[in-house]
Length: 77
Image 1 (cartoon, rainbow, N blue to C red):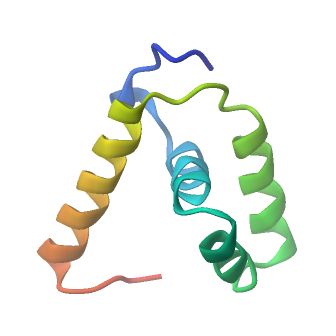
Image 2 (cartoon, rainbow, N blue to C red):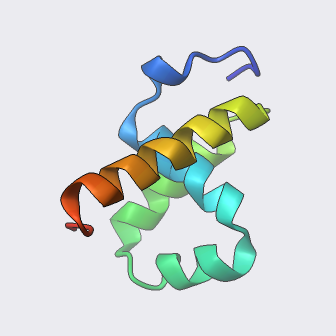
């Protein structure tokens, strides 16, 4: 994917991949420990296909995450 990707067209696995890359190795490793092999495979594939992600895309993702968290008062898995 190119840097000019449109945030509105991102699918769940792509958003998760961007999130995992943005939080860094230490935090991502803790999250990976909670996933099964199929989830890891899907997420790893999405991560490898992202290409360059603009700071604007990352910012929008974190804003969406924070809004979702505050709207529900928590997370549901």
